Image (cartoon, rainbow, N blue to C red):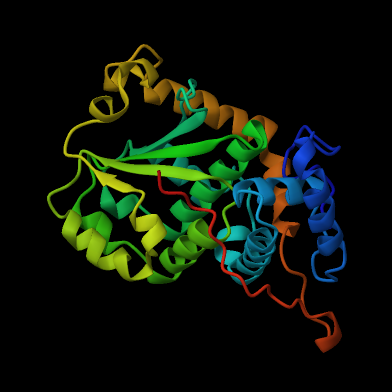
Amino acid sequence: MTTLSHPYKDCPGPKEVPTEYIKDVDVLFEWIKQQPRFPAFTKNHAHLFLHACLWNLEDAKKALYKYAHIHATAPDIFDNRDVLSTGVQLVLNMTHMVSLPKLTPEGYRLLCYRLSDTDPSRMNFGEAVKTFCMFNDVQISKDGPIEGYIVIFDMKGVRLGHLARVQFGPLRTFMSYIQDAHPVRLKKIYIVHTASFINQVMALVKPLIKSELLGLLQFSTSGPIDILGADLMPKDYGGPFEDLATMHAEQKKEIESDYREWLIDTAALKEAPKDNKSNAIKPPTKAFRGLEID
């Protein structure tokens, strides 16, 4: 069991639900409580997953089931979530993971990821996936159920040596999680400063990508300012906000000081071990379709 508030650290009580969806949230939460192997999920989880799934009840059940199952079956990614651990610190010290401060006019949050240390020998892919998921969980906690997310992956500094460090197990877990279980509305993924070997990257990941996610990908050899405009960008990309290194350092410090215990506690948000056949979770039959193509 968890001991802290989830999925929002500072919201122990249920968030306000739009009036027209109150009944749906109640129905999903009742379903959660009837699952003997979902011991730690809250009414806020019901709200979050329904919002991510565009208020489709069966899709939300499927996403919740997948979320709990992946968390239970991928301990290398979702257990031992101490932000001060050696592996996570290594990733945080060789990347910039940043939530940009200004929302788009549509209300979408921009998340930017890039390397700050480009030495491939220092990269541990499994720890990078773990850290990425931890960062995203913190962002969900801070944002609540917002309209959507736009992701910017900056490939500047990425080399073929990084591709050689990719581990298929964590990659498969990550792709399944992002597409079938991550409780957000993902609007677009921009791959900027695209490397010359992008076709080799896509050959590796394309077998794991569903058409919905593939439709969200957009590649550019230039920076994000050419796609999203200057007024949303940090100084690095020609915008008015602090540079990525400064924002990353500030957000890293916040996660370490304010979210360390909370992240460790999130390890309990998973499918409980099956004692016998009577308490098995029956996965819903309808596929999760929380990704959106504009």
